[in-house]
Length: 405
Image (cartoon, rainbow, N blue to C red; front, side):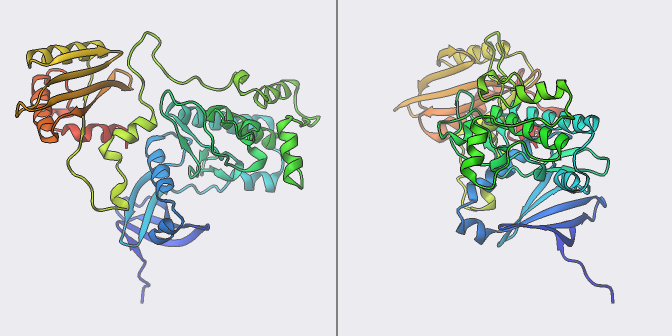
C-alpha cells in the first residue's frame, strides 16, 4: 500500500532538512505547481513561552518586503490552531559555510562574485530600512546555479526614517562590528557592511580575520581592528578589505546613504512604514483572532506627481469647508464633526513607495471614528481623478498589499 504523505494546505510534506531550538524545517512540494519549497514549522506554544511573537512577526514582515534575487523568497505563511508554517524558497545548494569548510579558500574571481551578490542583497535591504545583523557564511545559501541567497532574518532590525542608532547587541561574535560591542548605539548599515568585509576575508583566506579562544581577547582584537591579510591577497584586495573593516563607521565609504528625495519631495517609504501602515501586512491574525475591524487609518495610491496630489487634496478640502494646513507633503484638515458637537481633524501624508507611485496615508486626528469613515468615503469620491485603481476594480485597501507582497 502506498504511504500517504502529510499535507499542509497545498503542500505535500517530506523529509526534515533542518532543525533548530525553536523550529523544524521540512522539504515539501507544491501539489498545484510541482515546485519544491522549504517549510519552517514553529509551535505557537513555544513562541508564546519564549515571548517571541514580535520577533516572528518582524521576521515574516521583513521577508515579505525584501524581495530580491539574492534573498531567500518567502512564498506565504499558514497557521493552524497549534503551529505556524512559513513557506520558503527551497535552496538546494547548501550553506556557503560548508563550501568553505570542504574547499578552503576560494579563488578571487569566485569570491568577488559571491561578494557582489551579497552586497547587492544587503544594499537592497538597507534601502528598505532593514538591517540583517547576523550576516555570516552559515546564513548564506547557494542555489542549484551557484547563486548566493541571504537567509535567516530572525535578528533583523527595522528603523523608522529619522530614527538613528540601534542599541541591541546581537550577531555572531567573530562577524560583529566593534561599535556593536561598545553598547553606545550603532548604525545598522555600517555594522552589516563590516560583517560583509569579514565574509569576504573568510572567502579568500579560508579562515577568520578575528579568532581567539576567549571572548575578551576576541573583542579586544575586533575593537582594535587587529588582523593581518595573508600573503596571497592582492594589494587591491588588501586595500579594499581595510577600507571595509574601518573602525570609524562614519568613514566607511561603502555604506549606502538613506534614500531621501533631495528636492524637498515626499519621503521614500521604507520597510518600517510599509509594515506599520499596510493592512495587507497585518500579521496579528496569526496569534490573535480578536482584531479591531474599525480602522483609524486608511490610504490610497496615486500615479500623479506628489505636488499634484497635494494641490488636489487642498482644493477638495477647501470645497468641503475644511481648514487646510500644509507642510512638507503633510496636510492637516480641520472642521466640525457631523453632529456639530466637537472638532473633526484628519492628517494626510504623501509617501513615495516606488518610482512615480505614491501612497497617501490618511488618519483621524480628532473626532468620531464613524464620522471619519463617512468623510473618507466622500473625500475619495471627490479625489477620483488622482486615485489609481489597477483595471479600475481593485479596492483601495488592497493596493499596497499588491505592491509589497
